Each structure stands twice: as C-alpha cells, then as structure tokens.
Image (cartoon, helix red, strand yellow):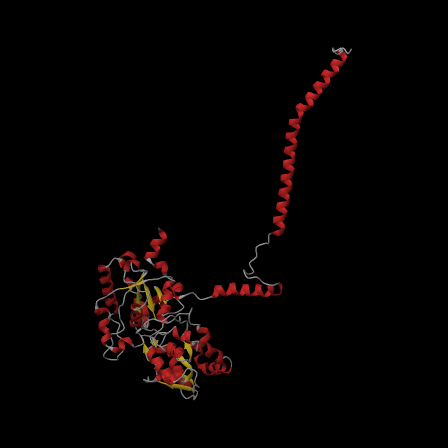
Length: 456
C-alpha cells in the first residue's frame, strides 16, 4: 500500500519547485509592462520617420513664377513676362484720386472788391497774367473743392492783383497789390480761425506777373522789396522762377505757366493743323529795341533781343517782327522754331504758345525754372540756348534741323504735353490746374488737418 506521507527529501523538492513556480509567475506582469512600453516607442519612432519622409519628398518649394500653370517649354518666357509685369506695375501712373491723395481745398468767399469787380474789364480774364482768374474759376468747379473749411487741407485766397490796367500804357499796374492782399488777409483772419491757426502756412495765393510774389515789374525794386512779410509763410503760385537763390522766390512756391486762352488755341489749330507743312524756319514777334535804354543800370532783355535783331534781322530764314499782331498765333502755328528770349523777367507767354501750337520753343533765358517739369519733358520738346551764345543761334538751329528735329517734334506734339500748360474751365484731368493740384499734393505736410491726425 502506498504510504500517503511523503518523505522529507521529496517534500523539500516539492516545496522548492512550488516556490520557483510561484516566483516565475510573479515576474510575468513586470516583464509584460516593459515589453509593451518599448514596443510602443519603437512603433512611434518608425511612424514619425515615415510621415516626415513623406512630407519632405512630396511638398514643393514656394515659387513666385506665376499662379498660372506653365509648361516646361514656356517656363523661361513666363519668368520674363512675370518680371516685366512686376516692373510695369511699379511704373503704372496713379489714378487722379491717387495723385491728389484725397486733397481738399476751401475757397474763401471774399467781398467783390478783391476779385469779381475787376472782371468788368474783359482783359482781366484773357491777358497773360490771367492765371489768377483761371485758377480761381477752375477750383470753384473742381471736385477737390470743399464747402466745409474744417475738412480742408488748403485754403485758396482769390485776390486779383493784375487787373488794374494803366490808362497810360494799358499794362497792369500792380502798385496796389500789397495793400489789397494785406486787406484780404485782415478780412479772412477776422472772420474765420484758419489763418491764425496755421499763420497762413496752408493758404494759397497767385502771383502771376513779372517777379511773382515781390509784386513789382522792375527786378531791382522787386529784389529790394522782397516777399511781403505777411505772405512769407504761405504758398505762392507764380510765373517767376529761377534756379538760383532769388528774393522773389524766398517763399514756398509752385511755378505755373502764363495764361494762354484755350479757346484761341483751338481756333488757331482749326485753321492751321498741328502737323501741317510749316513755312517759317525761325519766328519771333515782339519788343526788340534797336537802341536799348539803360533803366536803373539795366537793359531790357539784357540786350539779348537787340542782338537777335542786329544779327538776324536781314536773314531770310528768320521771320522777326518788332510789333505785336492780333493774329500772331497763326504765325507761330506756321513756324518750325519759335524764339522765347527773356524780357524784363525770364519767362514769357511764348513758352506756352509755342508748345501748344506745335512750334519748337527756343528758350533764351539763363537758369529759368520751367513749369510742371514732371508733366512736361522740357529737355525733349525744346532747345535751350545760353544768352551769351545768341549770335550762334543760326548755326544751332540749322544743326538741329538736320539731325533730331523730327524726334523733338514728335515729343512736342504729344497732346498730354500741350494739355498740361493750358488752364481750362472746368478743370480737365492733366491740364494746368490739375498740375497745380498735383504740385500742392506734394506739400500736404503743410496741411494743419493732416498734421493733427498724424499726431493723434
């Protein structure tokens, strides 16, 4: 019979086996945890590597060629066209609104003694100094005008100082200009706060005669008097301008063209088309003194006109006349070169008349500042002859006629160039009043309204 009691040695083995078995089973949970942990790490690393590789190999670098699909054969052309599009977009002209930068101008409603009463004389609106009238009328009908002075950038003061014509010689007598302007400023500064607010720095005046804001017809007196103290902080639109320091432009200013009637130009061109055959080689009609008078140590035109008359008066290629003629614009329209020598002042209406009637202006006025250089490419449409070289004028014109006259005429006959020198009513995009506004828009740092906005 089998003894149920196990021997001691066998029992010891049995115990040991049971203990060993129990100890192995107790380690299984610990081993399972670390196994799963490392396995998760391994799978995560492998997945991260695969995803990263996919993104790197399948994502295209950003390019700026074009948003349009371009075939490989057209790639180089696309690059060229894209480059040209970018450069052309930088050179595209701004819209009128962009050029004027939203500028607004308030026009003072002054008593008639400062402006409208002078219009009883028809010459006031049509003579060479009439830009003061033309600008006023054009602004009155312009979209830049505001009736609310509190939103204005600039303030236009319409005082006509060039319409007081002498009963002796018919020329404008501007001896009353300074007191008339001073009276107008006294009026506006007592009625509204805007002059005193800025001390006149955002106020605009027109000085359309010989030496501009000095308000005198003789240069020595004009220089001695200088710009009136009450105007030295304002903006002056004036026909006078030189490239050197001069007392009569010692003020913020814009050089404007003298007035030439757009109606008279249109009438002349209707009879004498711009591109017709021109029969006069070199033309001048106006004052030419045979024996110039010494007036206060100065000679009219610095004797330049006298030298022209003496040198070319008998030259058949030069059509020179010493007296004005009512229909002289038809002579300009029939001429190839039109002489524009200085008078007492460096500028003259011949500059404008020559350009708008298609005659190449020959400017003989050292260091003159010409109007609206950003709109009128003067060096490409005119000739400039130094005053000292006036006796060589014939050879100079002959050389130009034989070389690049056709190119100059092509530039000169651009309608946009001619438009920029004429004052229209109402204002037209690109005309002289528009060019004045463009020039003023470059001076908006003087606007009290905008300086207040930027400081807030």
